[in-house]
Image (tube, rainbow, N blue to C red; front, side, top):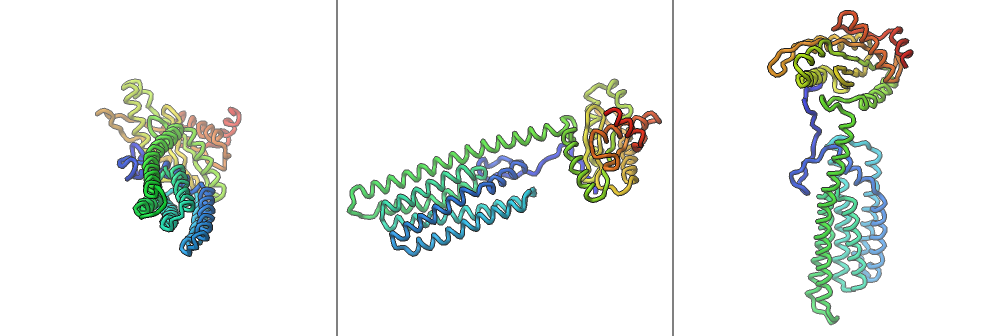
Length: 403
């Protein structure tokens, strides 16, 4: 299965509908944000313990079976939320967008249930009119709000909906209670002010969510962009030596487990210097970009195409059973790279020579394999160019001496 061409690889992006409405969130950043949601179990446990304790206290004081029932539901909700976090940890790493969305929805449901329980507790407690007890329950709203703003602002929709679920019924209950006639002095004024305080804190929290989310997106996007730049070639977008080393180690370890081979094809373009000298570096750069795209078209999705610099490329072919598979790819590379190019309306032609070294047969160290393949490449160019030659013992010995 061949990989489709793409001059500029585009990562899947998640369209945000809230904060900001038209921004695009790169998939690696979204993956980080979902992992952050599931990485904090202590606040969930702490909130659950506090909620159950307050429900038991208030329920006993008011002799309310409803509040005592909320304590039971709160305990079960906390257990289920912690079990969900553990299940996510066991399934990690989660990399596909669809799976990430499903895990995010599971987390959101748990958050919404917790927020609903806090709102119900406040509605019942405020209706009973015991100011000392309902102040305790309202303080739980503040604690919950502060916690979700700091923990879930990276997913603003979850954060905002949870915050409103907890605060809007509480504000409504305080406001309605303020309208009731009561003999206590300043009854209406005090409850009205308390409703106003909860409203203002909710509004300020919403603004904080927007700021924290924007800052987090900028920070994580910049971090991923820098990491990507450090591992890719600026001209062609191919992997550079750093990323090649990481992928080589991964594929070589896999090959050793599965009794397969990895072939390292060291490519050097024949005739490129003459084109660079004749038409200039911009034309040479354009030609290198076309070479990179052709190489990407020829390999499978698991194979790796890398540019070391200049007109030197590496193709890492994985999952091989026989040397003949590497030879077939090398011949195809020579055939496709040798086809004419069109740069600024000018037809240009080059060829390519290939040196091949295999792992783990010749070792599992990238530098040694590169040296072996380079030695084979030198023999290929000396023998007439546009050829592919496997590394032999003499090449490996030369590589060991050079090291």
